[in-house]
Picture: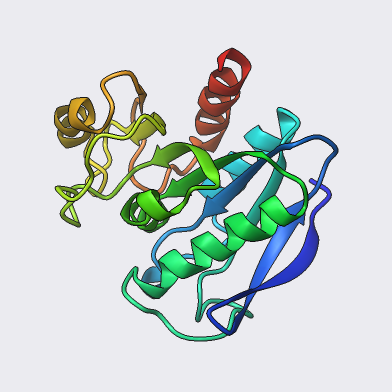
Length: 204
């Protein structure tokens, strides 16, 4: 990955990101797991998502939510973090990207889902281990943007059985993939996440 350090502004705060920019109008914004539990853009699952997208010819922007790494501000319980996602999408769009996906892992997937109605720049939503066993997801209604959800069979936070129950309400057309033996942290299983996303991008 040929990533460069970038900064963009979210609500007056300077937000730190890594951008792998390639030609063309396709891009993705990738969000990371929970800031209060050590989550950052350098997470292994985030890196697997970025790798899948860049392999498919997308520009990829991952960033640290407010209060993480060199991003200004402090944790805001998913509220201010939605502003960070919006700012990242606007920033990527300003670089000429028109076909933009929004992909998130765990807390990042939750923040992306929370703000989905205001994230007009995002054409599709990809969620890895949305933390349905940890946070109430009843707010999430039908959206044609929800295209792919991934979980692990041993994931206690993004439980695949609960996701399977909720997915028909989110989007019955969405792809759902469960990685056998993977827990919430996907140790040794990130190549499988990458392969699933690459297959999805090849076919959609």
